[in-house]
Length: 148
Image (cartoon, rainbow, N blue to C red):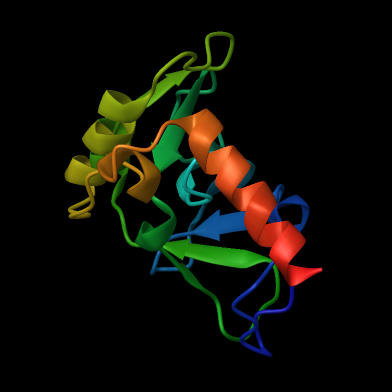
């Protein structure tokens, strides 16, 4: 991932495995995955795998809001997370062998609240307009036909 060019659009596959460091340049761990909301197209959260040298929680992943990260401007493939050990240790996460499944709105809102992100996750524009998924899919297909 090229951060020097300040590209604001990156592929999810280039983010996986990127190093995460503190503001003091201490290595926290790496990005394990990026969780997307299929309805809205937004990043729900980033899955952080913490190095055992930073925290002794090798069996747990942490869910971090995308907006909590910043990019290292001089080194490619490095994300910066302004968090101390204690705050990270107490942040929402899950066991490596038991990833969240099913509706995750409450979990994502808990993550956002913990990191001070003021976004109510889970109500897409389609839901707020009263449109069902099948209706919106039909509408999307119609718009695509109009574009052809």
